[in-house]
Length: 201
Image (cartoon, rainbow, N blue to C red; front, top):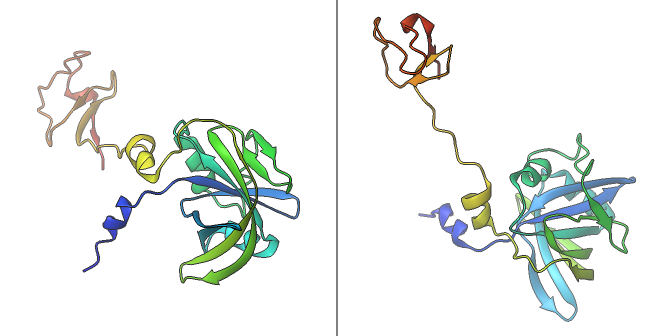
């Protein structure tokens, strides 16, 4: 038996990988960079085949990694993780700078930027793994890096509890019950049962 949730115990960082194709910037969230050698300085990254950034990186061979810091809000993950670069300009309105390779990186919520040049890649099934050489790197702040565990514990919104019952259309009070008595009176605005509507699932 393989319990895949055990893999959640592995410590992952979170990054915005940025690319550029035909003059258009693109970015996506990844959690897979691993330093695999020091001399030369090599990093591997894996990106899902369905991701537009995979197509771009295979064609251009260059990318940047913005190392996300603990102050990063959920909106960054919504922008770079829940949209497709095929039909969305994810960098529109984002505060960016550029490294020597001409690619952008995030100025906010980022503690370091690393520029990478692809040496080789291989098919891993669901993902493409890219072996890359570091061509430029700089520290931007001393803030701690955010981890995948931080994201799930402190950043990702918790699921909203679905409430069953009846809601008062006058004041919004919710009576949590499967039934609403005919003589029920709202404890807030004092309107009767006729002011309540059933909350549908």
